[in-house]
Amino acid sequence: MRSNKTLDLCLIALFTAVIAIVSQFNIPLPGGVPMTLQTFIIPVAGIVLGSKRGFTSALIYVLLGAVGMPVFTGLKGGLGSVLGVTGGFIISFPFIAFAAGLFDELAVKFSHDKDGVQRSITYYGIVLLGIILGNLVNYGIGTVWFMAMTHNSLGAALAGCVIPFIPTTILKNVLILVLGPALKHTLYQAHLINVASAA
Figure 1 (cartoon, rainbow, N blue to C red):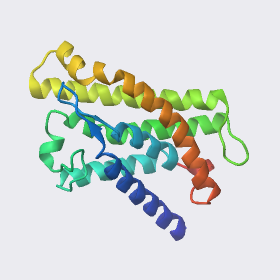
Figure 2: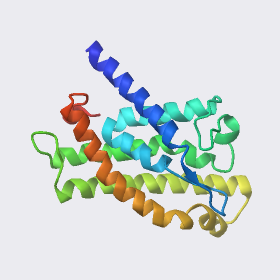
Figure 3: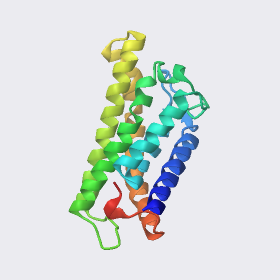
């Protein structure tokens, strides 16, 4: 039991570090909200680790940034980043991981092979719903927060925070759907996770 808990802690810490590293890759956009890979790696963490551990990993990442660790995009950290105009997007990160992990767990219950590999259209469809739900939570919280902080209209907020990111979000969703299950299977084969009890 202790070894399982230790492994869980190691996996959570590992993915927290990976999120912090991947978060440094970003493309500035005119609206002031950069396109980052945070919303790519965080759902992957949820799929691989499961809803609870994925949520925990993303939450630790947010908390580390909030206390000043330079883990956010551009090596930024501190409450100023969390409470700034893009703070809503950051706050939503744990829920993105939870949604992806939860729907992956639901998908596994409906369709999985003996070796833990999910290949059916049903599986991928359910996981995609979880990823899209995470997108909606991210955009919803982030946009409302942006409006509150900048006093912009909904139209202006959508133009700056949502519309420019739709094409890249679609691309990232496809990559998440490919990488997440593949990485989970790799760790499963290495006996580092148990697909049946990934939660």
